[in-house]
Each structure stands twice: as structure tokens, then as C-alpha cells.
Image (cartoon, rainbow, N blue to C red; front, side, top):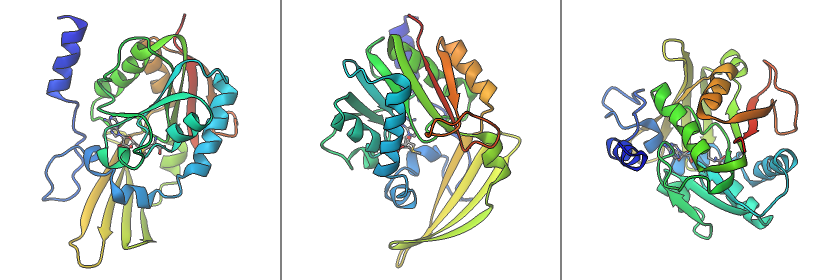
Length: 267
Ligand SMILES: C[S@@+](CC[C@H](N)C(=O)[O-])C[C@H]1O[C@@H](n2cnc3c(N)ncnc32)[C@H](O)[C@@H]1O
């Protein structure tokens, strides 16, 4: 089968559905197709433009300031990083699955789609950036690592990437099991747990709004060890040049909040 045909048949069959049920009665729709809407935006309102400015400062310091090539903000959400990149003169494009999030920034160039089958030609981006734990959502390892193969495919030789994940050790050790958050217009009741059988960090979010039935959402992210991601990147043909534990440039260690992988596609 040609590579083009193989890719289109993957598109038709779709990517896997991470099966953590939101409730007994909930259908098996992949959690990431349901959760990234208005409630996500409100719950994560602190993941804002100010934070994104720090992220892009860091990108410029580790990947350089060259503005000549195209930059993909992979899983861009509402476009907070795309917007700053463009304001700083980068030719940035946002890409995301959530139409609700993509439509938050109608002034930005953006494309809708699934990150396991990127609708871009080979070798056209000079940078691919993936912020705020936007990896490890699919149920199978094959699908998650296919995303890295797609990143390698669309990067030009010598092009750089940055992938920003949570640090598994730190997150699992500090998991807050139950939390109640009062937000504008609703209350969120959050349960978190680590499932050792699937190696996933799961979150169940029950949203209580006045005059509406309770809505239940799930987040379920594969908690990768650093070595697993390094291995996946190597298998995809990408080289890692540095690991960081924060966007302040601190070295990665077991207590770091983030696992930030920076590297490039070999020339
Ligand atoms: C935690 S959010 C991060 C958003 C953004 N990077 C930021 O920092 O604000 C994860 C994003 O991944 C997107 N996403 C989830 N599954 C996806 C998929 N299969 N393909 C493309 N994007 C996906 C969601 O819609 C959401 O915008």
C-alpha cells in the first residue's frame, strides 16, 4: 500500500478511543472528543496568555529566533501560543481537533484535524511545538507514537521540535484525589487517580450548573516514563538535544513539574 493510501485508510478507520467511561451510562466516545469545550476553557483559565508568553520566550531561547520557516502549534487549543508566535513575527499555524476551541480565535490561521494523521505534506514545517500535555491521549501505544512519526514526517530536515509533558513521577506522587472548584456559573467536582494497569492518570470532572443535569467528563492521559518518550522519538527518527523540567530552563529531575523534550530532525 502506498504511504498516501495507508494514511487515508488510517483516517477512515480513525484513531483509537481511550475507554475510560465518564459514567455507567456514557457511550464510548473518546474522552478527548468531548472534554475540550467550554467547560475545559473555564476550568483551565489559569493556563493563560501570560503563561504562554513564558513558553514562547523559552522556545526562542532553545530553538532560536529564526522566523523564516513555518511553525506548527500542534494541539493548539484556543490558540494562546499561536497568537503570541504570530505577534512575534513567526509564521505560525494552529492545529487542533476541537472546533469549540479553534473557534475561540477566528483571526488566527488554524486547521482542524486529528494529530495521529496530520493533513500536511512531508518536510514543510521548520518547527513543531506541542504544549501542555497534549500527547498520550490515545488508548494504544501505537497510536500515541504515530503522532511522533507524524511530527518527524512534517518537519524539514534540521527542523526543531518541543514537546511539553507532565512529569509522571511528580504527578503520580502528588495526585490530589478529590477537589471541588467553584467557577463562574458552575461547580466542578474533580476526582483523580492513577491506574497502574493502564499506566494512565485519569480525571473525572462532574460539572454542576444551575438548572442543568450534571455533566460528566473524563481526562485520561498515558503517564509516560522519560525513557519511553525518548525511545518513541528515536524510533520516529527524531533526535533529542535537551530535557528540561520547567519553562525557566531548569534541568529535568524526578521532582520536576514538567518533562520538556527539545530536539530536531536530523539533516
Ligand atoms: C490540554 S489542551 C492544550 C491546548 C494548548 N496546547 C494549550 O496549551 O493551551 C489539549 C489539546 O489537545 C487537543 N486534542 C485532543 N485530542 C486531539 C487529537 N486527536 N488531535 C488534535 N488535537 C487534539 C484538544 O482539543 C486540546 O485543545
